[in-house]
Image (tube, rainbow, N blue to C red; front, side, top):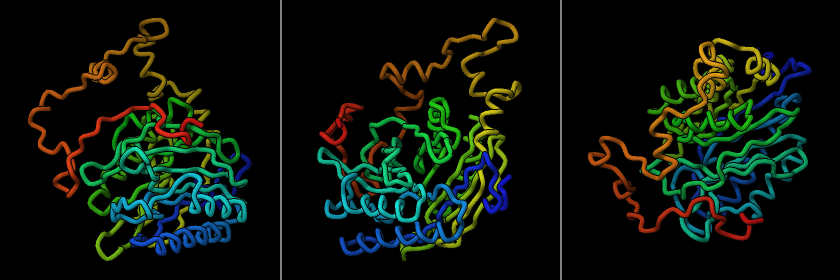
Length: 340
């Protein structure tokens, strides 16, 4: 299925490379600039590594490392020099790229953002992580929803980031909006290895989608990221999987045409269709209601667990962050860049 990692590319195939990037230590603007150059160099390595590659994917925190440092001088912006360098690398090496930045937010904590840039240097997808890994991460919750773009060779792509993938609703939303390949970038460390694997497989199977997921790898002297680049087919099986070797690029040929075929032709286990057409053998078109209490409550702003009063960790003070006093502002644009 993987076409020998993309060496043998079919007419319908899309070849993706997942970079198990060495976990960097970035504490100064000079280190930020050096890491930007390193990522761009690895874009070149990806192209030299495999001439058939259509898209190279870098993990979450590839640019900033895992320090959780929110110093303004270390934050990036969509129109800043780091993103400009990524765009130039994609043009130079004629390849699409998926990148991670911690994005300056003039109205609060920075965003944890992901970008997909095409081989002409154009920004095709811009996503802000909806579910920061609380209580460890300080990032502002995303406010751009889960966008989907048309990627190389016509594949429909979505991007979710790390902890996002632990919520089945995230992959479901991406697939509901048409994503055939769901990218998941992460900085996860070794304790998450089992959960990482099973959620990548479940997200694929439950949505008849291909998942392509990658973590940072190696150590920065404090943390140890696990690598674990993996591709899962739409039936939940693993196409190919990497280990923990830093800077290894895990590759596979993906077949979105077979995703489309399954979504159109499967009866048994076409779960994303059947969610909205319950029991269609018994009733015409299936039941089209929403029987899920949590969905109604979430929409109404009254989501509350039966054990909510017993939940002990509800802010980041245990990880050294001050308790927040600012409410979430929702999807309303916060600055002129978003409004544009």
